[in-house]
Structure formats: C-alpha cells, structure tokens
Length: 332
Ligand SMILES: Nc1ncnc2c1ncn2[C@@H]1O[C@H](COP(=O)(O)OP(=O)(O)OP(=O)(O)O)[C@@H](O)[C@H]1O
Ligand SMILES: [Mg+2]
Image (cartoon, rainbow, N blue to C red; front, side):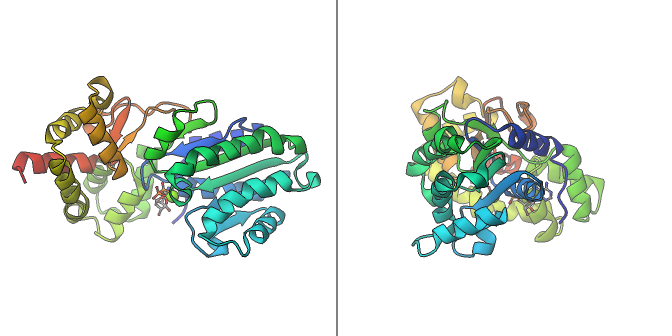
C-alpha cells in the first residue's frame, strides 16, 4: 500500500538528518502506530541522496539479511560482513555491530557525509536490561567515535513500542531525545481508509473512534474483518481484554481500573502504589502508554478524553477502554 501522510514527521526527520541530533533520538509509540513504515520510508528516501550515508536495521528480524538491513551499499556490506558468523538473532547482532563498525570505519567513508542510522524495534531483541547500555553506546558513538571522523552531521534513531523501556531511560535524560509517534492524523487516516475501500463515511468514523488513528488496527478492520468493527471488537475482547481483565482481578486492582478508565492521568494525579502496579501491568500488555513526550512533529499530542488520551497517559487504542468498560458494567 502506498505511503500516506506523515508530512510533518518526515520533515522533522529530514531536518534532523541534515543538522545532526547531538544525542540519539528514541522514538516510541503504540504498537502498530506506524513507526516502522515511517522510518523505512525516511531511510529509503534518504539513501538515494548525494552526500548521505544511511543504514536501516530491523532489530527484530531473526535471520534474513535482505530484511534486516538496507541502505548505503558500502556501509551495508561492512555490517553484513561484521555480523557473519555471529550467533543469535541477526537483527540484534546488527544493532550492536553498527556501533562497532561505525567506530572503526575508515575516515574517508564518513568525512563530510550526513550519517543516518536507524535501529527499529530495538528494545525487545536486545532485552530491557540492556536498553540503557545500548543507548549509551549510541551516545558514545555520536559524541566521540563518529565525531572524530568529521561527518557533516550524524543522526542515530532507535525505536520501540516497549513502554517499559522508558522506565529505564527516564533516569538518563541527557543521553537521548525522547520523541513520541502516535497514529495517523484524521486526514491521513481517511486517506488510508479510502485506499482500503471503506464502504461509507460512517464506517470510517466508527473506525476512527475505535482505533484513534492506528493504521495497523485500521488495516485489520478493513482486511481480515471486511469493515465489521463488531467482529474486530469481539476478537480483541476475547484475545486481549478477557485475559488481561482476569489478571487485573487476580491482582485485586479492579477499583484502580475504574479510576484509569475514567481518567488515564489518574496514574499521575492520583498516584498510589496500587495504581502504579496497574499502570505497569497495562503497559506491559501494551494497552496503556506514557504519552507526554513531544511528538516527532514537534507538538504535544493533545488530550482527548473521548479517546482515552490524557495529558500524560493514554489507552493505546480507544477500543481497549470501551471493551473494558463494557465488561466492568456487565460484571463479566
Ligand atoms: N503512513 C502510512 N501509510 C501507509 N501505511 C502505513 C503508514 N503507516 C503505517 N502503515 C501501515 O500500518 C501497519 C503498521 O505500521 P508499522 O508496522 O509501521 O507499525 P509499528 O509502529 O512499527 O508497529 P510495531 O510497534 O508493532 O512495530 C503496516 O502495515 C504499515 O504498512
Ligand atoms: Mg515496527
């Protein structure tokens, strides 16, 4: 499917690529919000540009080099070479190799170039315990090893949907620039819906209200469920909401769930040990997310109570909130 919208986000990334970022950019956002598609598009458009040295690494790819890495030929070749023979998942091996290779590469390859490295989906394959050390290694690369080779600029981007990784990185505000990506804005969402053959304006409206602009959820509704949001909600309920609700019940956190369903920001404004336990549980299950960081486009994501988006926290999909509310009301 053709790439839609994201004009502001691409503009911000191109600007960073030209100026350099000083510290690594850590891009995070809900599952399926469009991080990978955006970063791939960015790397693809840049790799053809004169004066740019670009590499994109999919840290989650286990073994296929064609999928795990692409970008400027010379750098790509050095990385594939460095990863040869290493044990473990290829994406994770490449994520580590890129810091070594760029630190050791000949100066002539880098000097005067705009260097751009994207490591997508980084937190899970390297492990939450290693996220801090990994981001620090990217920082060291920017501040010292690459700087010595006199690039025109350097931008390192790492991305994840793993909300718990933020807990580790929050302790090091000077190590990185935290940026949020959310689902599509309304216009882009409507364009995507029309490409996907939306049957009516009402269908688009309903999908918007339930997904909050999440492109993957929209694609699921359009393809697997042929625009039946009822069938989509049913499966989401059975596969996600029922088991998570059972966990919440078992932990004795139903009261806290009521509180967060009413106001996600209660996680901050009415913080208590029990609410924090619930926030952690919901974050771990990718239902809830900290969203107060500046977006990649440079503005904060505005609160939207009807979509379960607060100033600090949000439900990853409005549908999770709706389904949990329905189950609590029905006491099921
Ligand atoms: N701007 C866009 N134009 C067209 N399709 C898009 C766009 N953004 C995302 N998509 C599509 O939506 C789906 C989910 O996007 P993507 O894989 O980028 O999400 P993600 O944020 O990387 O998810 P995850 O957290 O699971 O890694 C993909 O099929 C992707 O092609
Ligand atoms: Mg992704």
